[in-house]
Image 1 (spheres, rainbow, N blue to C red):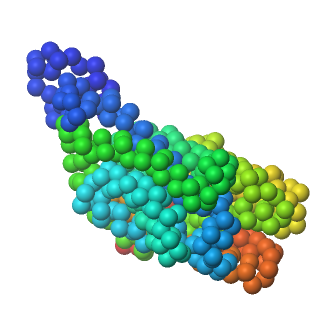
Image 2 (tube, rainbow, N blue to C red):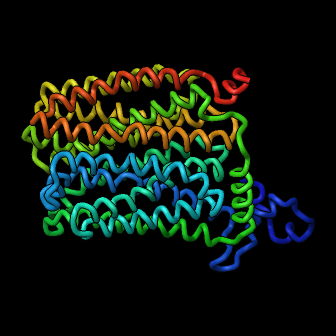
Image 3 (cartoon, one colour):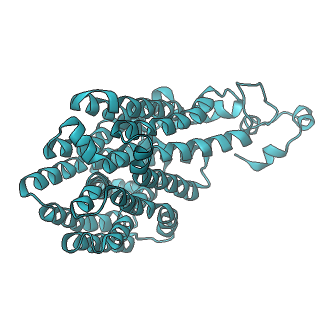
Amino acid sequence: MPDETQTQTPSESRAQPLPPRPAATDRTATAPGTRLSAVWITRLVMAAIVLAAVNLRPAITSLGALLEETRDGLQMSGSVAGVLTSVPPLCFAVFGIAAPRLARRFGPGAVVCAGMVAIAAGLLIRPFAGGTPGFLAASALALMGIAVSNVLMPVIVKRYFPDRVGSMTGLYSMALALGTAVAAAATVPMTEALGGSWRTGLAVWALVAVLAVLPWVALIRDRSPAAESERADAAAGSRQAPAPKITRSPTAWALACFFGLQATGAYITMGWMPQIFRDAGVSASTAGVLLAVTMVMGVPLAFVIPRLATRMKNQGPIVIALGLCGLTGYAGLFFAPAAGAWAWALLLGISNCAFPLALTMIGMRSRTGAGVVRLSAFAQSTGYLISIPGPLLVGVLYQHSGGWGLPIALMAGLLVPQIAVGVLAGRDRTIEDEAVVRN
């Protein structure tokens, strides 16, 4: 939003008519409860993005920290627990693909607001739902909210901060990593402080989600000219059909596979890494902190990697470097899980920063805003669909082999194709270029 409109005085506004767009950002529209100034809209959107990002992973990492207690409390087998760890990517694939259509119908802000409500409700209900089916259903509700927010957050950033996409994506990624890490580290100590019940330890994260609902409610209730203009622009942008057909683009498929394989590794890590350390003799609280170390690496790197990637024509070298860190970390888990636990957690945390890199490459592989929306929905939904079998297969291998050797070998093996498709996705080309070549 232009800075010069923010310094305009009321008398200047009356002295001469303003063009439609600057008038939409006039600071003099101040009807309480219905209109917000452009400055406050910007601040409110920033707060809404940060709070939403903080809530996009605690539903998963808090469960990972208390997976053993949850399994015992619900009498789950290892295979059923593997199904539980596969629910996040399944929900992200199924519901994420519907996000663009929902945004066209209701607006991106309203859909993200509903997503935050779903997260809060799901987190509150699932510990007390009674039995595994109810637990899975409530988890799916929370994950549905996460899924639509995952896809639409880049749209919100692009809409409100078109000239600061890199920095705002970094801020969003940092907040996401921070929420992930805090949930992993704090869940076990907080559970103990609240009486030791795993149900209370999981339910408390609903309070954080409730906080995230508030700024989104304020945004969708705002009826200032600026907000109405943003909603009109978003609706118009959503109706534009991009020229290239996504499914015919090799780059789109490479991005989807890269996103899927990195998501596989991330959700295996979030769901099973604390258990790997606990089975190696590490205490439950320390295992949670180790997962937090892995997740917290995304806080600084989520800001650095997107900026570095946008300065490079080819992002392949970053893909290779992150993959090598992951291979080293898995080798350490295989040979000395307890002795070098902190080093392996650190290396795997660096490797998991393929997520912000994938988001950055999605934005770089299309020239148009409409193309980015379609590419984001395709890459994330297809990618999460690809990632579904991974956590389930780890649970099955763990149960039937009686140890972590085979599961860790699988995790390391998946990094090899991840590096290969990541190098392909990192090439300096766009889906529009490929459409021209095919035509």
